[in-house]
Length: 289
Ligand SMILES: [Zn+2]
Image 1 (cartoon, helix red, strand yellow):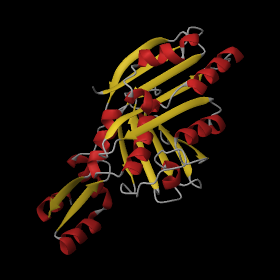
Image 2 (tube, protein in one colour):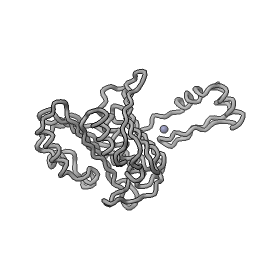
Image 3 (cartoon, helix red, strand yellow):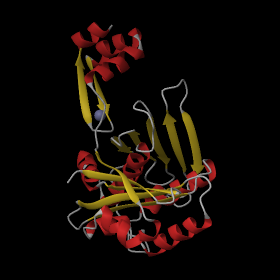
């Protein structure tokens, strides 16, 4: 099925809607470490959001990073996306014991904690990337992102992110919905969005119930007359390589490399995003020197 993505614009050109069915990428992501349900729900929501936000970038070389600094068992989540929505994700603790919250859902907010921070980093290939941040409000991620956009970027944004893990611990449905209003949006459009969001089911439930994007638009957003302006696919993919690891080793300097040869008789580097190990023996390290 792939990770389907759409972008739509309301007839009055005041509201943009983005939706992604990220079931495949979140399940792939779960398989990398064999993450627990609550850990994959947290990571899955973050990579889903990053993938959608990646799609809002304008240039081929642009990158967007979401970083959640948690205050509980999950200390850190990182997701990096490019302008096509290709994403990679990392979670500091893939094996958080699963708890259920008062709503009968995986307790992502409890695992992340409320006293952390969210960072949105946009790299446009200039000398310094743009870094924005906000305090977390719930640790549930969608709410934290909406709060970030409202107060740090003055961009009213609606986020819905969801990951449904079945009784066999497999990701059965995952997705995201993002609504952004354009400058000078009318009060009428805002009311229509609020009405739609008060009725809509969680995005993971809709995907689980086999709703297509068209079904969702017709059932909940008919009043805004959305026209789909882009249909594409996104994917989970790590951009690490042996070459990149060689560059990282070179950047450590000669002394450090001699040290690795003498003490460890080689080096082993680990990519936390895709769980790939890169081994370098003594001769290979000498070549780098
Ligand atoms: Zn990797």
